[in-house]
Length: 398
Image (tube, rainbow, N blue to C red):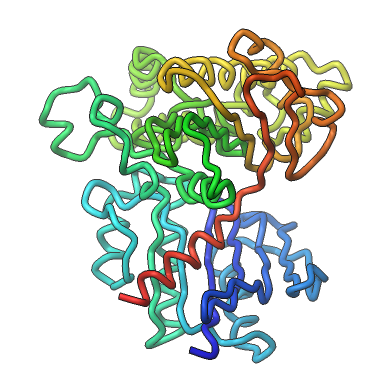
């Protein structure tokens, strides 16, 4: 095949990222990339970069809805300035208990993914919307769902099983894990020298951490939903279930309808907690660092809570793995927040983790561990789009 342009659509809770790669004959050449950020605001951003990283488009736009945001992308893809895709890959955050494999998208598959949107309420609604629009926008072009949960399918039952009655397990309540495409991309970049005992911390507005043995997921912090595990930008992370019962009863005093009360609780857990809830200021680590420098105690507590939580998970995973060969930081905070990496690792010397301050003073890919650190500590940006392209090509070959 002389040409195989693959379009990647990666939707988040308030953004849509897109890129295209030439994937014929084993090549993986980026053709362009772009994003629409700030959906639901009046000051959204729409930008596109060419293959060399030069910005072809950089606009501030009113983005009141996902429909407006995706139309900007659709118009650009049909402008004739970019190659028409031969196949399209979509990041699918969660397919629930019934969709476990990456596969061709059909209307029935979209309906099935949508039926489990409660498992990823910030991501699935916009994801299924884009899948439906892409089928209409490019009729006859194969679209594929690449699951965030796919990488975590190797988690043993002792970790995936929730301590609840069987009737709820039968409904699909279990540990699914998320950010799997990111984790898979780290393994790809480490090959062929993947360490036996590896911990990867994906730290961004959504944060998670995984224990990986011989390239396969052994355990991961996010469970049924992305709100579990580590404290994130607006999500609680793991929390005493009794707190949720207490909150729900309080909410029910003014919202006696059960679904209304549950929706209100979900808003608190997923959109008003985490770094935002503790700081009372922002869910953005960059804003919190600025606030800390200005003496804001709430911002300091939020960041300390974030770092403390991650260090605890690292410690537990070292025990689970029976040791540690390498720790990798990835994601927006993991790549760019020098202080966060240093603060997380500062108390982990007993686990063999020692960071060199000069080497850590960097943003982007680097080895930041000290020469005498028994554990190698690295920073590796994720390459999610490449993983999606690889799965699309593999599925096309079938």
